[in-house]
Amino acid sequence: MKKTSRVITVIVFIFLYVPIFILALASFNTGADMAVFKGFTFNRYAELFKDAALLELLRNSAIIAVLSTIVATILGTCAAMGITKLGKKMRSAIMTVTNIPMTNPDIVTGVSLALMFAFAGTMLRLNSILGIWTLLIAHVTFNLPYVILNVLPRLHQMDPNLTDAALDLGCTPVQAFFKVTIHEIMPGIIAGALMSFTMSLDDFVISYFVTGAGFVTLPVEIYNYTKKPIHPKVFALFTLMFIIILILMIVMNIIQSKTDRSKGKRFSKAGGVL
Amino acid sequence: MKRKWMTAPYIIWMLLFTIIPLCIVLYFAFTDSVTGAFTFQNITGMADYAPIFLRSIWLSVIATVICLIIGYPVAYAISTCKPRTQKLLQLLIMLPMCLSFLLRTLAWVALLEDTGIINNLLTSIGLQPLPLIRNSGAMVLGMVYNYLPYMILPLYTAISKINPRLIEAAEDLGCNKRKVFSKVVLPLSLPGITSGITMVFVPAVSTFYISQKLGSPGTILVGDIIESQFKGAYNPNLGAAMSLVLMILIFICIGISNHFTKSDNEEEQLI
Image (cartoon, rainbow over all chains, first blue to last red; front, side, top):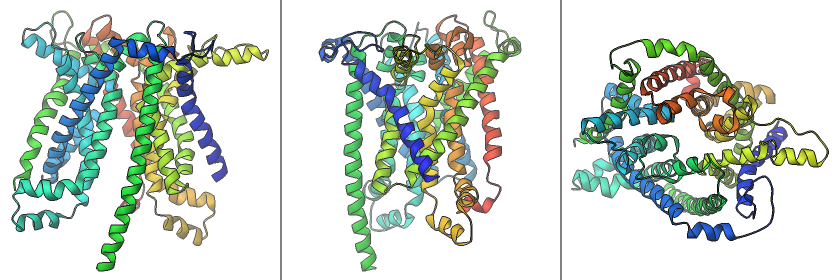
């Protein structure tokens, strides 16, 4: 059984990476047809960096991803802190609401927000309020559950005596949070923020429904591109993003395994003392 | 310390941007598109779309089952590797999720087209080209390709949490390999199976891009119709009614799958 599952694993990895390989190959192709490789060129990358419109879209996506991650991380961490102190009924009610954006299909979330923004627009007597703000609100909304679900387990694992000790030793609650609690729950906050950032950077479906003509993100515009024959410089952008994400992941993996190792040492020392 | 109040901004946010929007969907689903009067017509009109709903559910159930069948051995194989390799393989599963799914689906179009890469290969070795695109099979392939990582990751998390001593204990108590799997590994990985099924089925049943690129006009899905109500033929009332029915259907489907994957033994979940 072990052998068959290894074989399946290899096949699955090939299956997952063949399309990515084809897109990368297309970025070096002199012809525009992905299916036929005519000749090798770096021109697509030069064209990409000359295309101000495409780079602006990338900038828009980055702005939305960074802002929505910051807002969702702060709001979500605060909420998680409060949720642990709530009564059972209230807590389960809030967790049910938290799960709504996770289990609802993206298209329904997008449609419901679009309808609400249209409604708010008519209330405010504006033609269309769709733009950077509506996009930001939508992204924060779907990022919040990821932050909360990552931070909550850390808060539960944390020894409540640590906060009490800080308070007894004269910290104000705010000081206790910044000196003690935040360090204990940091891995959860980072994981939640990273998930939010990638989700928001790559989101197409929800953005597609709440975006206005004034402020468009990269995935939404890529959708418009794919309706007509697509220019290969988009593949160059894809390949660059693939390489950047790959490097980021490897670096994070190395950092993480290093901190894990030093933490392991610290714990074994503490165990020795005790 | 009044930490309770820290949830207040979050509750207000969710009220404004999750609960109220869903109420507005409800409102639109039950009002007439022209007069704005209360009506059941949008909902009763859904009967015309029954075949499309059925096709969406059917294709995404197939895709979910395929994901589970090929995802499980992969998750299992990853969990048997050395810890460092596990981390690396996990990242390699996550990597495609971070890249534009639109472009990756487009790559499948290039592979499957009538004059695409696979058919070019087939004709170059003297075989007949195959009709690989614009059919249900291509759509299921697109779903499996896009959502397989969402199945593998929760499965891997669940399997890697299983205490290896439980497996040793089962072996010591005389279970053969198959029994160890069916009595220990499988029941303990049920939470992963449940969340994997949800994470594949929900986006698959509501997709509209995959069907636009890999399907044909004869194989449109619910997502296509909802999208066209908001982006093409503007009829938000019909679109809202459809979203509402889709939500209810997903709720039922997830309920059924949870019923089947529920642990029979409550104690198992405590471990």
